[in-house]
Image (cartoon, rainbow, N blue to C red):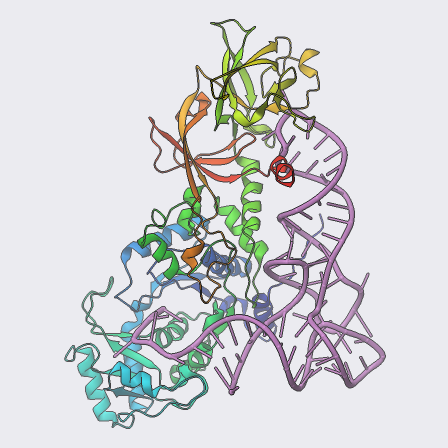
Length: 562
RNA sequence: UGACCCAUAGUGUAAUGGUAGCACUCCGGUUUUUGGUACCGUCAGUCAAGGUUCGAAUCCUUGUGGGUCAACCA
């Protein structure tokens, strides 16, 4: 065995450097810090795989910390969904924690900062505060309340906490520098009054800490060694460090924030705000709609956790903006499903085949291999009879020799069954083919070992016995957007690119009878068609399948080229 | 008319001063009772201009292009 040495991403390189400079491996600790205000998506999976992957690599704990400092947007429903998604991906967190666990510690530190002259209560309206903030190119101006005495600040802040003021009357601000080139350093807000019930602390608090004040201190409390976030937080690092300086004890580990580029994927959007819009405005049927790039959507669509982890690993981590080709995700899910999905036969667009030389009331049981990629997968029984359905596009009355399927006077093999020859067709008055009359070579039964069964026939097609077939509903998905990067245009709304054909429902599918007992979540390969799974909506009376991803189709490519 | 970040095949990512690799996609071929899988192969890249150096994707300068920053959101 040759040990394949995988190159390190820049985050791992930073960690290796820190280790080389004396950081003990046992001090390594990471965290995944979602805000419980929406569902996780494939972009979050990149962060999850990064942080938990680092935990696995260095045998270090990874905390799951809900960043729940804004009770107006956060809900228990999201907490539950996020936990389920992370577990489904196969990761285990060390501690389940909440920023709200630290409200009291944060409050006490804020008091200390007021006493140190590093924070003050501002009593202006949000408009006034915004106006004084300046712009990226112009410095801000000091608040008239900036130089309140420590006593007055303490008194006001205590009253804020006790609920003696209404929302918007006062805020607590850090006293830094209103002329700083980094706007986040222009006396950032630490607390605002919010008389809202919190999903964990209830009505205990009337003031809630802001992200910047909370996040770094939470990392510090948990002794997170490397706090990894996305690029848009780069500017926050300076403030993160400033806040840390106010409470830092040199005996303790000092967390380090580093930023990586968020993972974008072609033909979809990846912001919670936009995904929420798709849900609320009814473009999709909920957060777990199989067209959504959410973890729950992908799960329902039939994606495996392994394929998502593999995808994240292959796509990598770096610092430049990117749009990763959705084809890479599809490659990984096909790769895994190819190994594990049992093969079955299903006909999506049926046309009737009558085998005229097969006895009317005869039927037989044929043996079909479940998965040629897995010799332990065994085999199953598939019934055969005189009347079958095949795929309408698998027959042409006439075609050139590139067409390997059924045509008049030519032979084709029925998968797992016999070689048949098409003799004639029956059409309606509009010329639509109603029946294809064929004859079969009764010595050609698959697996019988006869000379006839070994004959080389170019084409093999799938089929189901009409008498035994089970009718099912199949949902065929396509990309949700017609543009590679629908939200990359300044003057066009991303919803203008919504693909009107992203969902096609086919209620006229016939599947082989072995599928009758399939259960929600079961994954299959419909031979020659694609990978499908049983949808949550499926019932015994009405089987519902989602197409996870089609098989690669070089025939379709040839057709397209003409 | 500011600060900060980024720039390697179509896409994503390596190479950390010493032969520009890998994966996906695309294209072609072999095998095949799935036009699938597997296997083989082809095409294709260092944003530009200077500089440092024996040697630059890598270091420096300038330019160009892209991104981020003006929520009592995270």
